[in-house]
Image (cartoon, rainbow, N blue to C red):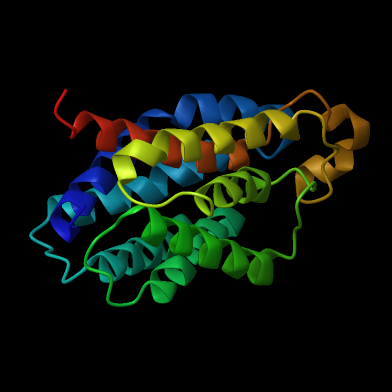
Length: 210
């Protein structure tokens, strides 16, 4: 997937993430401040505006870096810092990449995860977006080649990571104050992470002739 196709994919993701605000807000109201969906909507509206402009990325890494910077500048709060860091750290690790294939995405996600670790201090099992991201990274590391072929499996792993958060007790943010009452609820940040990969997968698979 070249830079232009990746740009079109991220525009698709942005539109779908904007539309996901109500469901993200609903789940965040259960265990958080109730503003996660609004923050993600704000960030991806800014991304959508960027990608609808005459902006032409030189390569895939610069595109993803620009998206990360845009999210960080527009969202504010913890989500802006975390998801902006994911994109910026991931993009720096694939500097100069002109094509987004499975190996490049894996390198992006792996470096993005390391950046989030450093930024937020959360670890797997803390009921955060990391639980979905770690699951996606583990799956991506064992795959190579065509992105459309492997993205469904990577996205499915992230979704399993979201399901796993239902059995976790939150240790960060407002949800931490709920203790065991956070059990049974999925983490909204993990949901956002899984949604991003799910929407990337939808776009990539639709690009492949039947």
